[in-house]
Length: 237
Image (cartoon, rainbow, N blue to C red; front, side, top):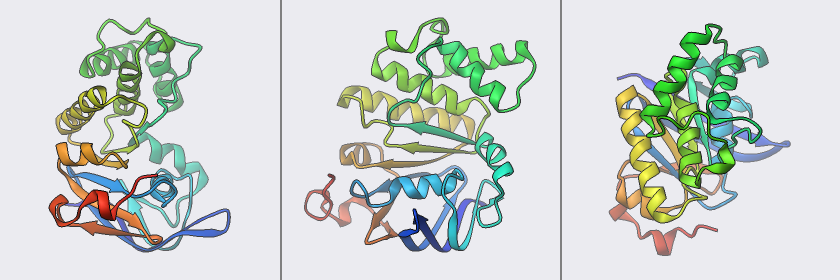
């Protein structure tokens, strides 16, 4: 099976300062992978590099067929169209309805046919359990429903890879569990890989997957949850 993400000897800088170095990561298609680490350890920086917001300063890297070293600014929108990105704070446009949020993203990513756009928007809303909520305003929805809209938005272009940055960080435990189940189910249905940054160890225990841990300015794989005690070795800030 091919790798959807591959970084070798990678180095990532933020404002000229090294955030991560000696990064060696391989993630295959259809995998579900956690990225764990303390707040400020570099999890978000790695995700930002994968969607083109930060450069890979050294080493080699590719994501969804795009070369991260030679990536040009004008290629970034094309890269992002092949990804789905789910943020902790939802990042919905509060001045327009759920449907118009989705249509805005579709217009920005090159969709033209209004009929096809509306059909795809309704399809992804049904997929995330929000059928009939297209005319609702984001502020009228619960946190869990807003995150479902965010997941629907991430699925619009049938991505090969979903990057989720603390997607349950603003949700209560029960809603977090529902959102996780949904994310895993739709990724499986769409044949997408998930790379999810989190410091919610209860989710990691409940929904097993490969675990990459960011610490000491690099990324290491942890074989299983049972090989470390998350409460003694790992402290979320």
